[in-house]
Every structure is written in structure tokens, then in C-alpha cells.
Image (cartoon, one colour):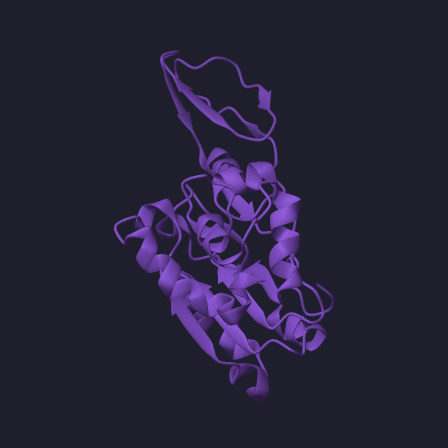
Length: 225
């Protein structure tokens, strides 16, 4: 978004020299991480290698899918691995989000661009609470404590007609309360919100029919359009 978005400081991993031991080989430079070689048989990754590993687990979210007239904002926590690979919201076929939407919108297109256009036309916007975070897997439980929220203050300024926040699961609601609420104006904090059952495959114990009924708040009477 525009001003106010936190900028990540580039992390520079400096080359490190081999640590010498009585039986080690002569020192050599290795780009990006240092290695300790003891007795030519034991190799251990040192601190710089761990930093590199953490960087590979850093996930970044998507821009919002929305229009200036959006009335409902659906918020997940952070895109999962498959969504990141495809550049699509809720790309995992085991995620029930698009199945739920299809139950409310007749003839929902099968392709992602058509699906997105269909929800946007009905005043629904899609986004995530977090802009970035360290995440070792696709589950919400894998999100690290270094989470950085999106700039909702700017979003609400550009989308003044938002009347409802629909959290896709309890984790998204908790992250919003922890990281976003303190940054908002009083008026933005007063926007009504509802926590809906997570559409993630990790929360498949709830029957799909029950989820469809709970998620009906998303489109309301527009479902026959």
C-alpha cells in the first residue's frame, strides 16, 4: 500500500571463514554460511546458515483483491505454500473457500480470474491480515512471532464502504486484534466483524454444509445473482 507500510531491512549474510581445529583442512571462504569441519568427518552448519534457513521460510502475502465499492472484506491469516506458488487466494483444492462461494453464486467460473471477478462484482474483497511472516509450513500454527501486518489504515481510507470484516478462522481474528487494531482510528476499529469457520483443510471436521450456512453472511441475498 502507500505510506505507513513497514519496510523490511535487507539482511546481509557475510562470508565466513572455516574455523581451524587440530585436524581441520586449511581455511577457505564460503559464501553465505560458515562450516566447521572437525576430523574431516563432522560438518555443522553455523549461525549464518541458520539465518539463511530462516530467510527461506519467510512468506509474503498478496495485494488485496478488491474494488473501491467493496462492502465486505474477507481476511485470512497468510497465504499457504500452494497459494504462494500459484499466486492465487485459496489455491489449495482441499481448502473449502471456493466451494463455499460456489454454493452461493450460481455458475461460478472455474478459472481463478473469473472467480475473483464474481466476488468483486458482489462487493466482496479478499486480503490477509499479515503482509509477511516466517512460516515453516502452510498451517496457521506455523506462523512465527515476527509477523508484520498489512496497512489496514490506508486500506480503509481507500475503501470507505467496508461495512463488515469476515475472518476466515480464529487465527486471522486473533492476528488482527493483536497487530492491526492498535494501528487504526476509532472509526476503523468500530467496523463490525465476524469470525467464520476456517475453510482450511486443517479444519475439515466441520461439515461443508455447516460452513456454507455460516458463510452465508458473506453474500446474503446476493447469492441468487
